[in-house]
Image (cartoon, rainbow, N blue to C red; front, side, top):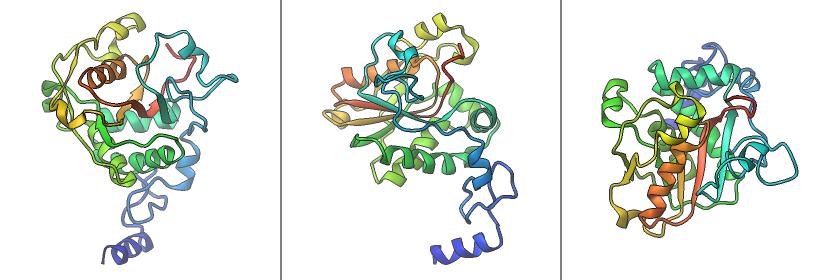
Length: 238
């Protein structure tokens, strides 16, 4: 019945591409081929430090070489955070477009199938409850849930944000590194003990938020952590 409905919806384009609103969404609200071409997908192999594009022969990019050591074993990101991808992520995060979680999560699952990492749990980076109340949804949580479903891996809302902090996008680089320190705690440590974690967020900029979240998981007894984001800011950005 579900497959029949998808074919019906695709035939009449009832759920078009959520970006251009006219392209073929395959009956399930996917990005159309033309829009996917404009999203600057990051090619594999990804930088193990940030998930971005490599710029040399090493397994990490030049920006990560100059950054503090990362607490995770690897990273992957779907798009460069610029042009159309920047608009899509901005709409998803700030303009009440939670439906973008589906196409973003499906593409993220494609990326993770290429990575040599088996996760036991998919864990999103949480919002502070006051910010969640204002936004009404956690974009990283929706994105992570779709990714987990497509990969067939359990989703676990294992982290909580215990310190709100200032919005990362409003800070300079030095402030971004300091702002999230101590911001996260694990809800039920026994549920993540020894588990390999796929830690998911929407955008990777300096990695400070993901570092704080990964450190909380590792301190609580998790196994290795791998980081996945929908987008990575370009190397030439701040």
